[in-house]
Length: 137
Image (cartoon, rainbow, N blue to C red; front, top):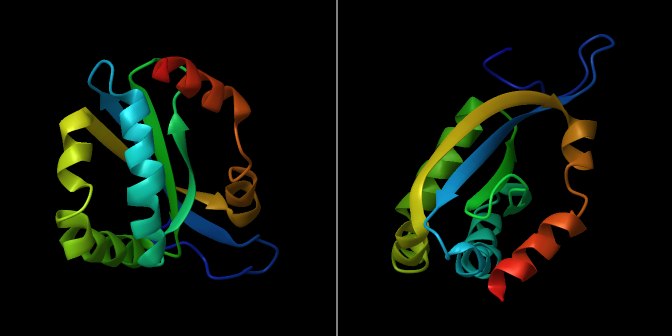
């Protein structure tokens, strides 16, 4: 893997994006609340900072697991975007504390994917949403 995703095709290589997949371990019983915070507060703030939020939602492997997928042009873009977001007053005075209160831990991995694959991840996942609806009951 390269340190920077390619801006466009090089030779016959398709364009790529750097993708961060973040997996959250939530405290029991917080999944529905966490999802509302992410969907209604955090994602709009990220998008306002020009962060490409590809997908997010409950993980299929456990009631207390959640994921967030973001895409960037390169590693520098990832770092500068995250630094700006997490330092912003909107985040710090907004949903930060409530989101952190739902978390046990999280881990991120960063990989390079073809842009077409990233776009394919944008499709809604109705199964995950039905799991969330069950957790909210």
